[in-house]
Amino acid sequence: MKINYDLIIIGLNESAISAAEYALRFGARVAFIHNSNFGFLSKNIILDLNIDSLILIHNILAQEARKIDYKIENLKLIGLDTYTQESVFSFSQTNRKIQVSMGKYTLISPVAIMTDILNKNLIVDNNLNVNKVNIYKNFSDLKNILNSAIASIIIKGSNLEAIYLAQQLTSPNKSIILPIKNKQLLPTEDKDISWKLQLILEAKGIKICDANADKLETNQNISNENNFIINTEKNISYDDYQDLGNDLGLKWQGYNILANEKLQTHNSKIYACGEILGGYNLANLNEYEAKIAVDNSLFFPLKKVDYGNISYSLNTNPRIHRIGYTEKQALQLYHNNFYIIKLDVNLNYHHYSNFIKLIISNDNLILGFHGLGENLEELFIVIKNIKQNRYGINYLFRENFNNIYTYKIVNQIKEKFLEKEKKQNNIIMGIRETFLLCKRS
Image (cartoon, rainbow, N blue to C red; front, side, top):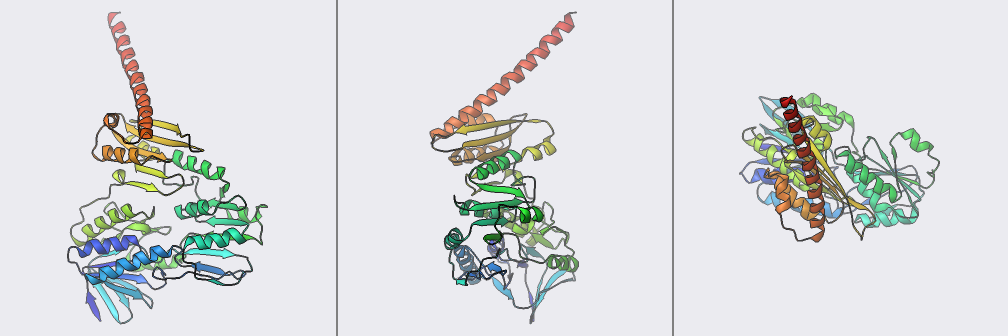
């Protein structure tokens, strides 16, 4: 049976939900395809802790699963058609249209949006001789098991989920090891923020090391018998990606699809958004990318992503707040036509300092803001508004704030700014004096 749609959405995650919801507003006929092995709709989590077994923990956060389930059911009521993979999908492209064959159905659409091809499961591998344990309904239950039975935990993945888990599982009597593949703990963040967070994690007892497998195996501090390994990376075969590339002309960088600033892949009929592009799985980023992908696929491909004006906060401990470019990005785009203000602001009720980094153009426009710490939300909101409206940094000094701590930070930023202005004025005055002396001689 052949069924025609305006848009096919592939994947089961928040990006796919956002894209479907937005497309349905225009009255589009939308097909939503996901893999039956995703496990997002599972209500229970099964752990099998037998020796040398590989355990797939579906939906550590069952609450997230219920939220996605609820959203899909609501979207079905307003016209969304959903298809679950019960056999192998077959992708093809004929007469400038995308075809997805699955069992007795062939779905046809002029365009498609990919948000993922397989789910990201939390994979746990261990050497413990423990009987099967069923139905862990949330992360707290898993944490209790790990805290009571495990001496050492290695969390693989080099991603934000791995950092979350490391911080949640840390305790005085447990060794937490976090191997990273990149030079920075968070490679997409500003290097100073990433380094500051790493220092905080290490101060809490989390060991951060190179992800080289040989180094981990030979580490004498890890007990082979009481070692628990959690892998937060995708449980997928690279062949699945290669097959899609061959069938639809897609190109990949690792497990991330390559797309341009309009979110078009190498196949102009297929767009991408969300997790499959790489980066963070955050609600505002997912919604932003989904809307651009839908507008460009259903109508005309005119909209472009502008990550320089997208703000987000990462739920690390302490939290990271960011809008705009990193120092490295600013150097690539603006060369040396910018300056940097850095602050370490001490709080009496914390064991660490809040860290602020502002990247400002020579005409005093904010190019980037990076904050690590607590009580930065008010400052972050104001700076986001200043940047998105292209106001100068002077606008910040005229704002009124509710939090006295925000005033403290802003006053320190102002002092740094005025100090920089004074130095610049002194240089200009010196040049003028030198010019006049030369002119008289």
